[in-house]
Image (cartoon, rainbow, N blue to C red; front, top):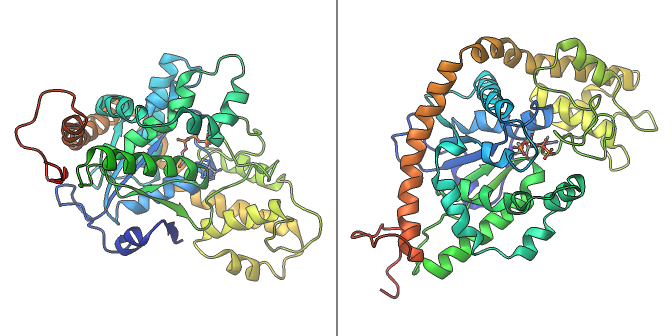
Length: 371
Ligand code: AQP
């Protein structure tokens, strides 16, 4: 299913990015982060994880388990460590291949937090306060809205910018954060780049179908780790019978037509899920379902397609999760290689902003204007 590349750069590279070993120079560098919180759901899978797998064939792909972002919510330290293993196993089970991508833990590369502080000093507090996610989470965390929730998008910007990534595969809910990231990169370059592009201004890559999978019980709100309904959230590792039950009980709309529409959020959501699971367009699903007897038939077909899509992930997960040493080895190797890239960016960034020792040989990314 094609995704929406944000610009000509991403589109030009969509089929021409280097694949294969990471030692090859990157025509297209792809980066995305994912939180090790809660159980990953169908929205995460369709909006993000599926795109990660696809990215391995399109460019130099780096994927980061953002455990530092997870600290913005109340958490148990041991559970957080376990969740990093859970997510590593899930991502590998879903098709990430550590020989074709770089998979690592955010906290293993301290350059992220250093860059985050520098970028904080270029970001208006007012803009952070107006971000949708901040407003939603600060309502949800009424007792203690920690500063990490406010600065969350700045750390996210640092994650991506530290790698000079060109493209960021995400779901629709991250569009606003990507815009902030782009503005911060532009501001850094115009203030400190001396005419060069020290930080690459990245493009989002949002799937055309499945960018915003909705809660099955409340189809006007997105399927979500926090705040969603249990019955309306399909988890990637749910048993087939559970998936079938949740989809069978999905809230649908008045009228019997199996077509998408603004007044049919429940049916539209089911059609989109099925289109992704079957690898065809929503229009094709509407045509296939034209002779269906009603929503019952639609739900049965969506349930079957979803179970079939997720079954291979579920089948591989248990064995992968059982071997924590192997998961550690994947994360350690990923972090080592990620650190080499991020450290080079940070050398330039320090040089530009005037902190740390003066570097004898400035990188080509730093412009010559004004020198
Ligand atoms: N409903 C969704 N549809 C499509 N894509 C989605 N994503 C999240 N929800 C949907 C995408 O999943 C990626 C990982 O997001 P994350 O690291 O923020 O993980 P999360 O906390 O598990 O995501 P949630 O479910 O969005 O949590 P809440 O709502 O509690 O904050 C991102 O690329 C995101 O776009």
